[in-house]
Amino acid sequence: MTPSPAVTVIKARALLDGTGAKPLVDAAVIVEGSSIKAIGRQGDIWLPEGPHVRTLDFPSGYLLPGLIDSHIHLSFGVYGCSHEELMNSDSDQTMLLRAARNALIHLKSGVTTVRENGARNRVMFDLREAAKRGYVTTPRLYLCGRPVTISGGHFHWCNQEADGVEGVRAAVRELIKDGADHIKIMASGGATTITDNRRPSYSVEELWAIADEAYRFGKLTTAHCLATQSLTNVLDAGIGMIEHAGFREPDGSYKFDEAIAERIANQGVFVCPTSQTGFRQREALLAQELERPLTVKEQSRLDDLKAKCESQLEFLGRMWNDFNINIVTGTDAVEILGDYCLGLELMSQAGMTNMDILQASTGMAAKAIGQQDTIGTVEPGKEADLIIVDKDPLMDIRALRTMTMVMRAGERIV
Ligand SMILES: [Zn+2]
Image (spheres, rainbow, N blue to C red):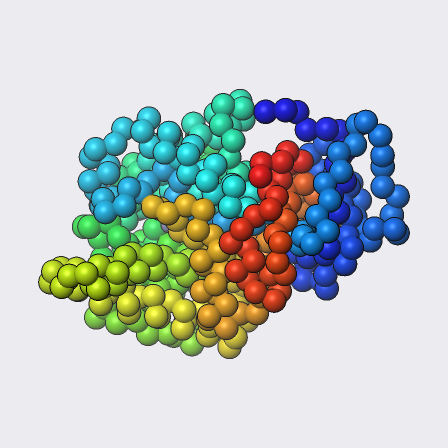
């Protein structure tokens, strides 16, 4: 890889800076080293010249901050293979190599930052170390390492089971010692076979102890919540962010709860609705159905995915439009990487405006993961994580399907 020049001038038709401000037309951004030095309208600001300056001119391009994926799993995922099969068949080394491949695929799709929400053992810490040494090219990585889960809980095979107030405090300390940037908690069951996603896992006391312990180290917390009761529990415990927000009742039905939504809004808790989870699996089964009758098992899986995908969009629309909850984008990608734009298209279907969606994917997401001083907006002093797309994403969010340029910390990737 050739070293980046000292100064880069990027010209574009318009800049959407991630703050929610109106687009700046005929924009120029000056990048020095890894960070943004100045921004202005071409003709209004002085643009450096000379052999040390690289000029990238995109007369029909739209310049935006690099996208942030607030919820991803880089190391899992082989299509058609359950988590349990994968845990039995793959070594940590295989997972690490897959994570390196997935990280680069995602980066090339415009995602310059990911918050990794769970892998086995030290896999993610090793990936970050490899990236730091320059062995691999990845988005910025913010890691939980392993999710904290009850004995036999969702993702227990990542190997951070912890029970009781003392147990969970010890788990948080161990994770921080290993290098965790945030603490991910499995507050209900999930797609792990022996768990129940309709019921909460941790008690409020345990959740409170995790939040308290994380807070003492200055770390943020986020909780996987599919069951409705788990939402109430994490709100009682003061957890800062909710993943999925499934609103699933003990009888298996999906039922939006306005009182809970009100609390999420009032407590300023971020929600990452992971709108696209299950969408591709549903598509695959629907395609299969056109070719041959589905087996009983496949049919019940399809029915389940239909209810899940539909409720996800309905609840997202309600959380955003009726309660003004802080929504951020996350793919929860496990099998298909580089598919970030699908979630944006679904957010649009759920009723968010394109400007809202861009915010959820940049400035708001940076706040949710505590990195608003470094990334998420195009402002002087911030890191030069930038993308260019050829169509106006305010007109059509599908503009973000194709990247004309991806830059991470001043280094051009695409
Ligand atoms: Zn996840």
